[in-house]
Image 1 (cartoon, one colour):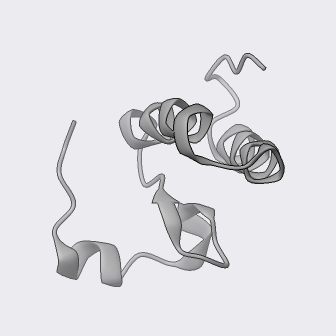
Image 2 (cartoon, rainbow, N blue to C red):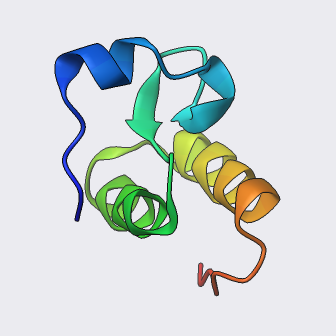
Image 3 (cartoon, rainbow, N blue to C red):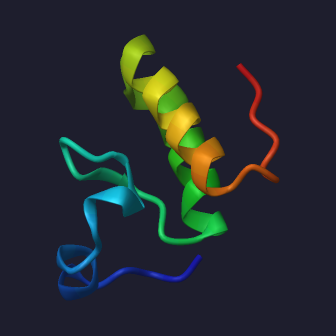
Length: 67
């Protein structure tokens, strides 16, 4: 996975985050999107998981998302 520096993350638009209001779970590429899905099942609330899945699917519809 490519690492995001603090500066790179700071300059990402809100739309590049799976939880844009919190600017959490950056998804600038498919690798980060898959990682966001995996981390969401571990740490996010059920509502946040729904939002994360929806936003990942919006940007990367080719990624298969299981519930």
